[in-house]
Image: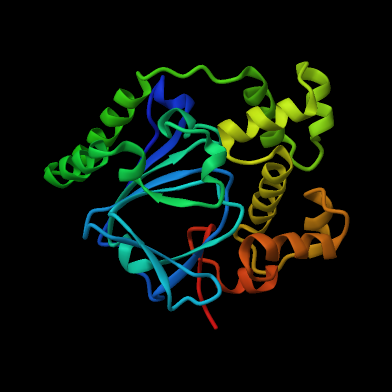
Length: 273
């Protein structure tokens, strides 16, 4: 199996967390849940020009997209096939980092997955063709980075309040509040929520909930047993019941089930039962 990750240099690094590629990737399970992270992703299937996202309530049904898709600002888990990851390349944006590449407010992609063709038109088709023609995995990563840099030249001026809020929410999602941030940025709560949603796809409250959820996953990483009450307190939940409620809302399963079935990729959980 080939597995590559690449952290881009400035100016792309302001917006992109990682470029990544998998070839020959297999899993023993057919489908898995992809948990919300507060980030958007571009995913390009190089094996076939098709991607599927399954209905959470009926996982025998799926919505079909082109081979290149963008997973928007999700506050719900997705169900995908592991087969579509056999040869795939993608972009993991930083929170709020996808906005310059969307050509629309990020809030319009709340809990949406769309074909990249719908956003970039013929440019998305050309990108996939160039990736298929690239002779090596490293060359494919280089092609993707070049295209993103070209897209970035379209110009983008992020709102300073959003950047300030993201830094606060990322650092302390369990204690930072919308009121606390708006008191420091000189915007009304309504205006702040609007600009934050336009650039990140989330309201500030939902984003902080997702970050607390991710913080909880971090506390569970590598552990065989977990003190759930301690995790709840450390991550800023009112109590253990509140923690379990939020965990189920974002993952569709309870924390114990997650712990029993997690994989090396903490935001990808086998669909079982």
